[in-house]
Length: 307
Ligand code: B12
Ligand code: SF4
Ligand code: SF4
Image (cartoon, rainbow, N blue to C red; front, side, top):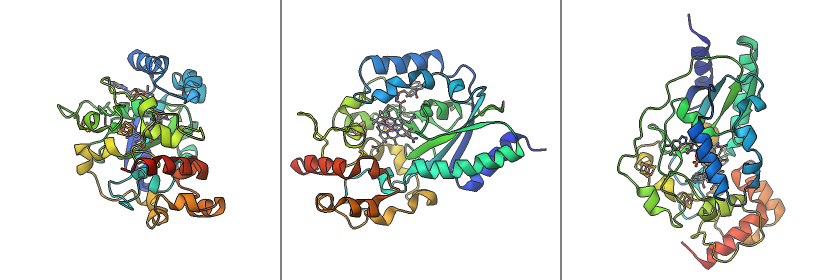
């Protein structure tokens, strides 16, 4: 007879996820990961992301998110190495459907099924809840933390987005991913245009282009910030990773729906369009996070310093 772990995985693969794994929440996070995260915050590496420091207590205690949480079911969707529009300096993941919505939609279906068939309680996460997602993914056997600090999977390289559910079911976990397959490679560290990747496999957000173009809310960038031509996110550390070369060209079909929105657009178009057109075109895609004002700020900075 199949155990609940097999049923869960079969159901999630059936919904279209690319990778599925189960992690135990016993001693999560481990003291060394806790220490890493605390140091990252104390050294000011989170830049202006105050929400990160403010939610540390929750990040360190899944029980606060779901009382009795015993296991995490971690899922990944591959976002493909193909650029929809090679002359548009928007990171690949952002020229797809907004992954938060995709994860939420699919995981809600999963939870409905699980509640009916397995019992237990569930709490969905995909950037939406304060969880250390990459650490959970390593525990669930999906891949390893690369020098870029990203989770690298053998099948999709770093080009995966993560989500999952916490549950109070005590499931048999998968084995944590046992290898570091970066070896002597350090392409991401050398290629990062701003030197944001630190020697301890973490990223200083103060220097990361993705932070400035996606998360920063100011009207203008402070002097000295150079986004190297990117107008939303940055793909340099994922593009150069040798594991990207082996990963599928196309994104998971669930993410592909909005790709055509980015096909015939140039950075200057963001300076011309009004709010209504922006919303009509990009609703349901990650660039809504920056809003039109944020995209304009990013484009103006990029035009001063084209790639
Ligand atoms: C804050 C944040 C950012 C910040 C800070 C990035 C960072 N590296 O921390 C900014 C805005 C810069 C950012 C950028 C990007 N992000 Co981001 N981001 C997050 C977020 C919300 C939290 C990350 C976090 O906890 N950072 C805190 C610090 C302390 O983490 P850390 O130092 O790397 O340590 C962690 C691991 O390395 C790990 N670790 C565990 N054991 C060990 C052992 C050893 C030996 C080592 C070395 C490490 C290690 O433990 C720590 C806790 O998880 C997550 C979603 C989530 N809730 O997890 C997404 C997330 C990490 N981002 C994601 C993506 C896609 C990106 C971008 C690629 C987007 C883009 N194209 O522009 C870039 C990549 C930049 C990079 N190289 O990291 C994906 C990554 C998927 C993946 N394959 O790993 C995530 C998981 C979102 C998601 N749901 O899919 N991001
Ligand atoms: S996203 Fe860009 S700026 Fe940030 S660490 Fe990667 S290469 Fe560096
Ligand atoms: S580019 Fe090389 S060092 Fe960086 S994550 Fe990929 S394999 Fe590891």
